[in-house]
Amino acid sequence: MSEPLAGVVVAGGQSRRLGQDKRRLRLWGDDGPTLLAHTLGVLAPLCAELVVVLNDPEAWPGLPARAVPDAYPDAGALGGIYSGLAAAQAPRAIVVAADMPLLSPAVLRAMLAAGGEYDAIVPRSPRPERARNVLDLEPLHAVYTRACLAPLRSTLDAGRRRIIDFLDQVRVRVVEPAELAAADPEGRSFRNINTPEELDEVRRIIATANH
Image (cartoon, rainbow, N blue to C red; front, top):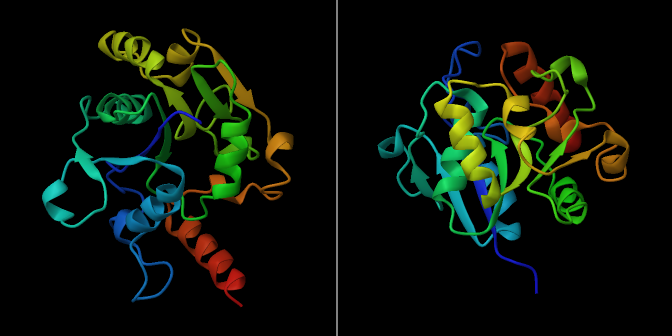
């Protein structure tokens, strides 16, 4: 029997470039879920518990997840990963951003299957131009164990924010794009929404998939 797994959604972004709260986007129609609710729905079948890292829980009554604040506000991805992982009770967690509308259960399962004795399972982006770190990794579409907590905390307390500053302290399994190609040949599951142009692109993909 596999060990319990948590699902963590990091939803503390300010959506400054988009100009609207992307967590509340209804990409599947006016009667469909918000993007945040959709993300939780993707994780729910895989996870024994769900945690959302956000700083306005009062604005989200009825979420099927435990809401926790960001322990390191303005610390970016590392702060969100630490906050969610620290709040989860399971020994490991899938950690994703709240703005990935094409999140794929098949890709997440493939990553979990690539596991082994690692502290972090992190995919390399199939579109390096969109990655924000020198390793082209997707830290907010990854799996972490509680062994990552102390290194995360020490990195954050030292004022460091780069993903590489944390990952070189733990056992990492980097999952290459070719390993996930069968589940997601176009790398769509890693798409996120930061700009109006990216929002339009995602809407086109969803519309095409529904026809």
